[in-house]
Length: 292
Image 1 (cartoon, one colour):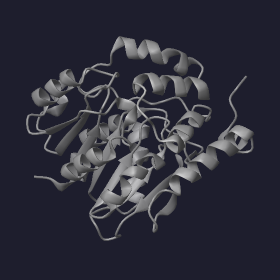
Image 2: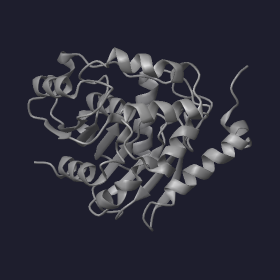
Image 3: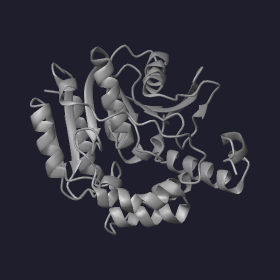
Image 4: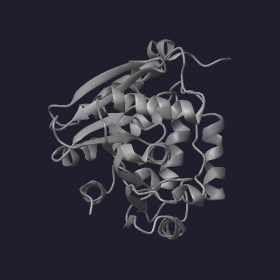
């Protein structure tokens, strides 16, 4: 049985619950937030924006299934100094809708991304990504480094080091047959029972039912790819992450990008980010976008 289209999903009880949860989290963004839909051959991309229009722009890419609303705990701090553009990744959970030519390759995915920033009128910009969003952000910066002022990667998996086999094994049932309960159980395991924001968790769990496209995964860059990579880069690591060994990632970053800054958050796991610990995440994001 094939999965429903996004339009069909929207008219189901699961779709109604997902969009209600999305709107509830977005309602926690500051007053003055605006939503934009950019159209292209790849589809319609939803961007939620906040901050002074003339401030330095930053683009935020969420982790897989998390939607752009996941930055609700960070956008006020970032928006005090920057114009924030948080993107629902096309083909993933959210309010972006694939069109007649959805991305099918990494080249397509990057073409979509740069089409979005071009549509926003951004010549250069800062970019932050978490998890899957970090993979896209790094791939974009490697492809067009002259466009990226600052690069901030939150617990980037498969960017500098491999993932733990135990994490992948634990994730396998969720990947094979995603359900709301499996998502909740998996996140509870990875976060070690830490108290999680209920609205954010509801949306993430409901996102498991979203009719997403096949995930396009940029390849882990080779060491050679980082030669002469001059983008100001900050890597924020979750010390308690079960996705990978944060110490090994830290060592790999220092080896591959000796000029990059690394910030390790002691009380964070991969799936508590970017929501918890919010104050520490916000300080790290501002340090990354503040530059040297």
